[in-house]
Amino acid sequence: MEDNLNNAAFLRTDILFIESFFELSEVDEVWLTFPDPRPRKRDSKRRLSSTRYLDMYKKLLKPDGYFRFKTDNTDLFNFTLEELAYRNDIVDYKYTHDLYQSDLRDECHDIKTKYEEMFAAQGEKIKYLRLRFTH
Image (cartoon, rainbow, N blue to C red):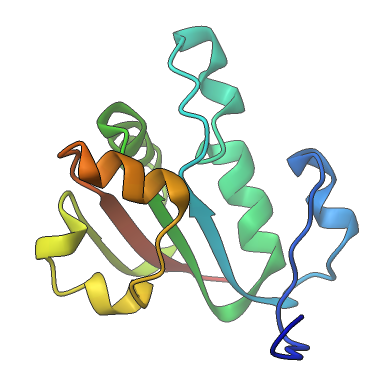
């Protein structure tokens, strides 16, 4: 708001309602940063990087739009990589288990969340991936 940006949106809502806020193929990028890892196996379908939610993001993204994901949680990151391994609708897919030592770092514009700063200060490696969906 301070910069008078009209091309950014921040919503505080239940993720299940996300499709009611955007038209199909309206969004340039979806950033999923440091979501709750929901470590219990029975909660795997509620993880924001599960197939259910990836399908939602795909609907919202423009054909050349990116899905980007950052986390400190190794188990959640590996879960996400496994979810993506079953898909045949992704392109321009890159990931790293150590963002700060990766050539992908510039893509994140060195914007860090409070949690990212906290976990990185504790020595945790920040994981990152980006991809586009085919339509």
